[in-house]
Length: 460
Image 1 (spheres, helix red, strand yellow):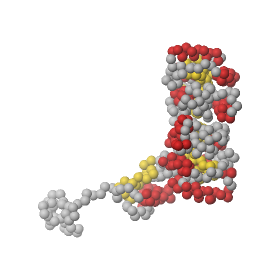
Image 2 (cartoon, rainbow, N blue to C red):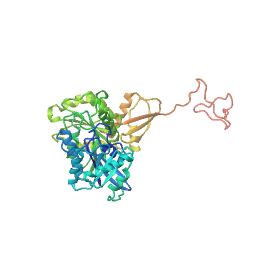
Image 3 (cartoon, helix red, strand yellow):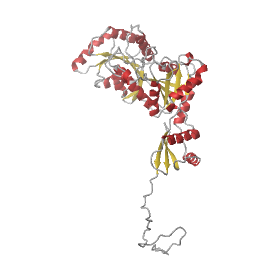
Image 4 (cartoon, rainbow, N blue to C red):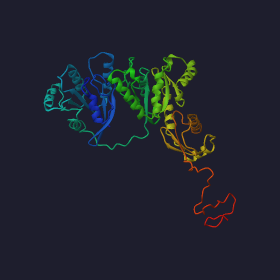
């Protein structure tokens, strides 16, 4: 699939254009410069021609500071595989030295470059767009990404040489969200899983803002890993970009099949870990608890650490625990097998015959279970039909869920349970027997074993 890369200096509207082209709110948009740092991938289609579009962080070519230099490095990775480059500039301001440096860098790549002059939403501003020809790029298009002006003309030019392809829906891709507190090593884990520098890693908490995704094929199975921003308590988030990052992270949880909850072995299990784990549990996602930076602790403490972890996260008792060091690449390869196992558990369907045999072997005295049916998967959801109405006590629900796990597995996934009771027969007034239809008034109904009378219902 052809690739289009959007580049430009900070705060010119790259993320707005990316969201406009893909039709999704994937990239965080705000007035604050430098919100996007990692490269964000999306898929789009124009005039029957599908293509991949990549949003990059704001580039300042000669900035030697760590984060700007890493943003440039991520952009260079994207540009290496670009079929078309959209160089976005701000049409409301004059050409800057950063624009000229970036234009010079792009011309040296030898790839097709289109200059899009953004925020040209009036005729006067569109006229000013012609001043940008001095950057040495022949194809100039005035656009307004926010108001969708000129975007179709831009895409028509950029995709002119792209082939028309029939795209099939994705099949068998396991979507995995990497979540956790800030600075526990989520981006380092993504880089270790993908064997490339996919996410910017720094000791500064909150480096990752957008959800960064990457595809990996392992033993014939395709995975889509999504690195999310560190989630912290509402009272601790102050910047607009940080608040939006948390919203995007929670959205990634909802879209995932499996969630990796990353914790810091040095810090131990803290209250925020339980809160974040609760987001995944509430969403019904299969989960794996990843204790990162284990190389700093030592093998002799695993049993004690896991016991403390289980005490703190009792509601995640179904989730397997993996000890690893993303930085040293220890225990990372084994995660693929665990992810596949919990995904298969969450996707498991139990046949009606197996559930019938399960009911027959069930020792449940609170009420009689008539039959069970599985309503859905991911998470597995079972409906118990019983002879009594009203909700079950949580301890009885827990017993039934534990019996389902014992019989069918469901490792690493929550199990949902719904109880439906049979409506009771209408209560009769005490001492008043039921009268048969057609019976004579005052006649005594036949007792058990008594001979029935004539068809008119009279007693024999």
